[in-house]
Image (cartoon, rainbow, N blue to C red):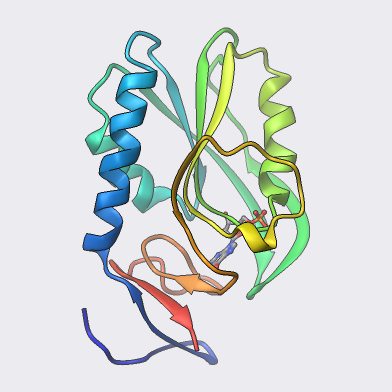
Length: 179
Ligand code: IMP
């Protein structure tokens, strides 16, 4: 991983977590999911867009029978949470009676999950849990239960590995933090 600063729009970012560091967390999460959902054929509901890279790498490690679906929400403008969540793309699958695992890139204020979880529960699934790559405990403003957390990080703005700054940085294989 390069030690060079990168620039996205008007901001500079420094290397923070190399991809190899994330893979250990993914292995541990997948091991727990494989054990907890062994006979339940869970439906992983990936929250786009930021979770696409995490979901791909996590689900390659999940070896039990499972299905995958996508929802899309938007809650962010720049590096500050707007507090607004808008569902852009809904779930088409019939989730009644299913075991759902929402796959998130990062839980920051918890606003997105606070919006999404009741809507998922209203569809009558057998259970709903959350798997998130990153969690910023210091930012949390809502009471959301997070059963599967990859890494807890400080309240800094990070990009890469699916996470963006105003559209840029999602393709970076490693994680960078704003300087
Ligand atoms: P929350 O609704 O405040 O929990 O934020 C969740 C969403 O905000 C995530 O799915 C991300 O899209 C975005 N987000 C929060 N923190 C960051 C960050 O550090 N970098 C990039 N996006 C972030």
